[in-house]
Figure 1: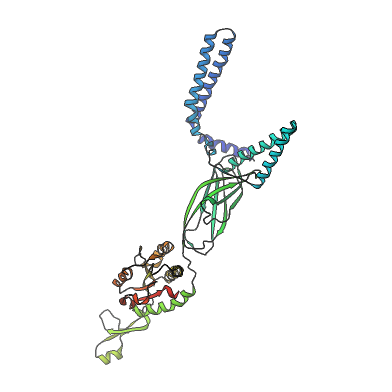
Figure 2 (figure 1 turned 30 degrees about the horizontal axis):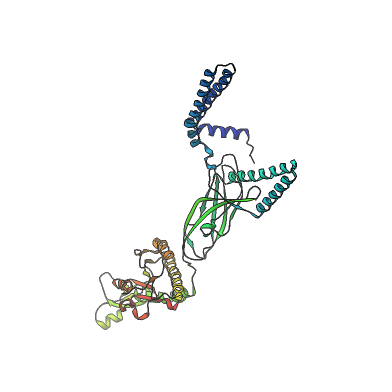
Length: 442
């Protein structure tokens, strides 16, 4: 279906075309047409010369006409073909016969048998029309799929089990012909990926883009890769033509951060352990120590000063400026399937804890067997942390337990450790500055 343009729009389109015209291409085209016109005149002259018996002149002009035509075919046609805007027609398509197409082909077979047996001219005309319908269907569906570009738009950060909006944007680069009845779907040959349902576009105008959104939910953390195809049954539905498109997307899905029962159970315990370790300007008394020159007089404990005959000050637990090292120990002591399931729960709990410290504006660091982040405000490293949690996998058990031993070099940091190691294997020096969560308790 062609769109009717107003005179102003037609003039504007013509002006844009004139500004973007391909001068070398048009020069080659007119040169080729002029040379072919000369070749045609020479060919006509050779026919006339042959009729009057001048065979040598007829042969010479015929050879000259042939030489000019060959020169155009060799020198001009390839250059024009490289510049043509219709090169997008050469797209690779796959075909699939539909149920309607099978019924139609059976009808064609019946008409063929009837025409051969009866010799009826009307049946031959009907057969020709039916075969022409198949040909027209193939040409139109190829035109519909050609010149179309796909772009998939997803949010920057995606969490497991949380619905998101996936947008498919189709752009029709054809300047005249629109496209009809297009579906964007996952490539079944390479796995459906995260695009479980096709996205349907009924009409795509020429030179314009159309956008459709669907809701997608990723059931698990990890990396997802999607291969996409464009499909159409336009115009008659006899064949479904499938065109692979360059829209491969690798999507990283973070663990779920919806708080679990384990999270609500351990958070008060962790808060209590942190409060007992850190000192600061809170309200709960932490310790009484000797006075220093930088201390404020309002923190002096006069009773303790009187008993000890030396100036003493009170220290309180710190309610802000908390520094936490979050540790996920991925080494499993066995290959038990239940332990692997508990590992996934531990990853989810670790993500929930990290998100909690991000919301309370704490300073956070993170460590696994292969990656670590520096101590920084949680907002600066939260997505690096979640990216590592999205990809971390269980590892075979260590023989020397060196991963947990290396944590003892940082006694001043409060550590939250998630591990599958048995309780008796945790280094003693870690207990004073750590809160350990065992996979068995999850």
